[in-house]
Length: 496
Ligand SMILES: C[S@@+](CC[C@H](N)C(=O)[O-])C[C@H]1O[C@@H](n2cnc3c(N)ncnc32)[C@H](O)[C@@H]1O
Figure 1: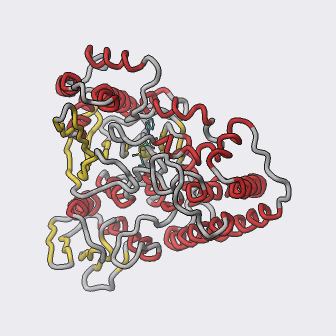
Figure 2: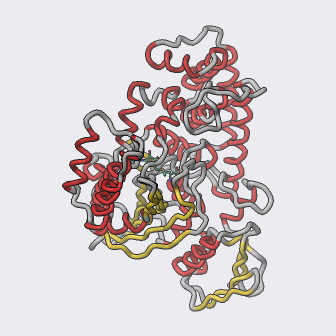
Figure 3: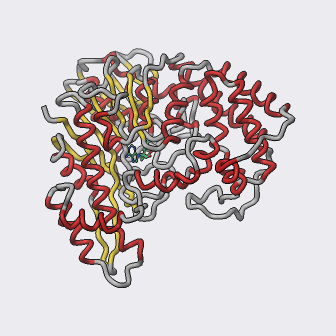
């Protein structure tokens, strides 16, 4: 059997993942690279060639080239000539910070040999990239996320796969007409209304609210998808600088198009991509879900059964990432998923948050000094060393770094334990983890997060199998100046 690469330029890690996929799925007796082709000797499972992520076509014994499913999906949903497409199918529904590259999520499923009939867990599922990739492969999955917007978006993406794109488009058109015809001005009352009035010019807000109302009344099963498409436009029409993930007052001009026109365009674009994907995938029966759960405490949640997941994969938050909740607050409030007054308290619950509430600062320092979470010696020692390095010139943000790192490690330890209870014995768990650095008292510290997390995991029910460096892999839309550009795939296996 011969395999042919896609036309886009590869990062070295992609070729590494490609080889791993071949070995795990097709299990050939030999692999030989020759120019643009890979020759496989006697693959044990040639029928699985269609699942490969990083190959466009295959041929068998001089026959016609057969396109892989990934090739078909990327070909019609392309990002442009010779560029890897990342927005095919439902992936482009809504921006989300730190999104998985869908190809990497699918490659991980392939490397772990995931197959229909199995159940996959993504404990930090975000906007649901891995759940969508599972659905494409006919595999059921459950995602958990503490952020209600993440759960809303993941649910909407999964839902969209079950609806014919034409019917979604028709319903969207109908809802838009209904919104335009609404004569009554929407009432903007209470905390939600006051907050939205602060952040949107009234004329846009009025259109957004009329659309929301019309979708709520007419959307039926399409509601979440249509609201998500509208939510993705909010920043462009807000008083917040749209391209700055930090919250700054707008200086750039507003778009030329009306909100309704922009919505119509966005709906068309999404439905076109969905339609193209459905030509290849068909309509997918949904048996997957995203649930609003804190994965540090997920093991006892009624929606999740212990010992039922065959494998887990995720991209966990970075230590000290930008505030997720705060940067998405316009969508959270507009969709009525969160009260404005709850933004900061939810933020502080997120793993990797920089937010420390109330008396938490002192308590965290005590926890760090006493190593309350019983972290391994190296991680505890690192946090103490950082704490002892702090100098007078370190501002209040830097003063918090050792405590925040300690809390991040402790939270990840809880998440590892929780996931270990949910998976079956021996289940693999893949994590895409990025490194960090920090400067304290003028000294630079490189924090090898993949190594730290792998070690912490071994104290919470996991064996560390391998860490694969993914050179040049960067998550999309991540805006962080203290992240290093390298990420790693950490592979763990549940204790038996
Ligand atoms: C890097 S993002 C995941 C992005 C996701 N892979 C995607 O493709 O959209 C990390 C996620 O972890 C979530 N998170 C943070 N703390 C959490 C917790 N305690 N329980 C569950 N999810 C949490 C954040 O809300 C965020 O969505």
